[in-house]
Image (cartoon, rainbow, N blue to C red; front, side, top):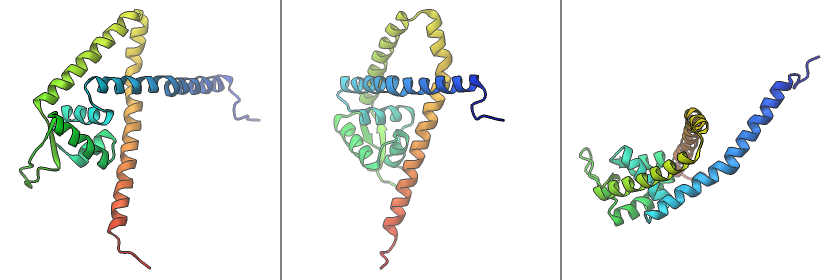
Length: 181
C-alpha cells in the first residue's frame, strides 16, 4: 500500500526545505530590512523615500501611479514620499509633454543621483568588508544561490504588486458605482 510519505528522502527534503524557508524568513529578511532602513537613515530618508529614489534611478520620469506599483507602496504613501523627496531636492515634478500635467510625473534630480550614488558606494564598501570575512567557497556558494534567491524575491514582489493593483482597481470601480438601495 502506498503511504503518503513512503520515501524517507522526500520527507527529509521537505523538512530541510522548511528549515531553509524558516531560516530565511526568520533571520535573513529582518536583517536585510534593518540594513536597508539604516541605509536610508544615513541619507536622512525613510524606507519609502529610498525605494522611490531607487526606482527613479532605473526609470525616470514616471507617474506617481507607476512609481507606487514599482515600489509596492500605496498611492498615498508614494505621494507622501515624492513630496518629501521634492522638498529636499532629490526629485522634481516633470511635465508630460503629451498632456501637460506636471503634478503626476516625477523625475530624479542631480542631487538625488548624488545621494543614491553615495548610498550605493557605502553599501558596496560594507559588502566588500563582508566578502573579505568569508572563505572563497562560501562566497562562491552565495553567488551561485543569488539568482535563485533573486528570482523568488522578484516573483513574490510581483505577486504582491499585482494583488495591490487589483485591490486598487476594484476599490476604484466600487467608488464609481452608484449607490443601490
